[in-house]
Length: 241
Length: 114
Image 1 (tube, each protein chain N blue to C red):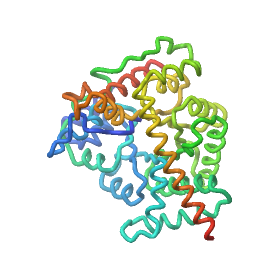
Image 2: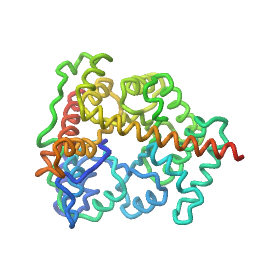
Image 3: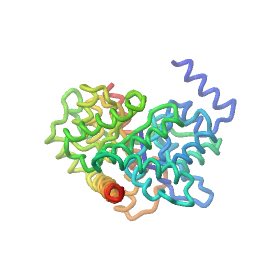
Image 4: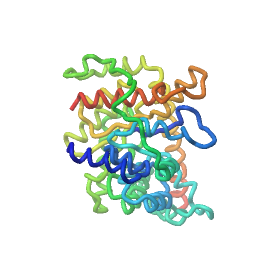
């Protein structure tokens, strides 16, 4: 392992790597944050072998509606077809899950690694309903021959979301990405349960501190409260191992 | 898996500082990065001089972290103390819920049509 790391750092000084390749050489894997199939295809083609995963969220699923019958969006025909297929489900709940998974399936054809689907965010304060919907989402992926080992279920990191993720991991071997993390308490609770992945939002944390301090930016990256929070979370999770 | 990014030191015309939060956390296990930032990173060969393992970090305020699990009461109380976490969480979750309400309306209309 040490030899590999050493080689990677030598490589960066000898061959000029772009910053995506440099991040990967430092142990980071990269997930594209986009719900646009054409954008994901374009960016992964332009920077080959750098982007392993893709992340979606309720915004990207909802944006499908704005692309229906659009003359300017390259994904319009595909989105119209996904939406019509999803609307054949018996209830709106089932249709939302179906549409989210259909988007994930399309993305899985482009990226080699993890794809992610978020559970209906309105269920964020119910353990049982989040477990049920996560299992339903996984069953839809499995029916399309996508193994659960490739899927990360996104849940908001409420107390109930953290409990649901623990049950999904221990009882069903379903991996979760706990999202909307803006503070240490949420991160610690997830770390204590050895959950697969958490998503803190450094940019939003910086926005908060910029607002309350009436400033537009900070003098140094070391003064960025969002970056400080993620570094602290990283230290806590290393200690939890 | 950090998932939102801002230019910490302000956006300059030449975009020099605009991806510094990403570079500042170099070495994180995973990063979720929007396509416009991926393009800026992929098009730059400037050496990364930061690391997630160095510099100033927020300390863990929970000395009981290990081995004692935070209880529900402790989780809710400590989360409540954190004004940034509570306000940004509320903002983020509310936005996602409203978008899902809108999606549900669009689905209902389509289902009623067919």
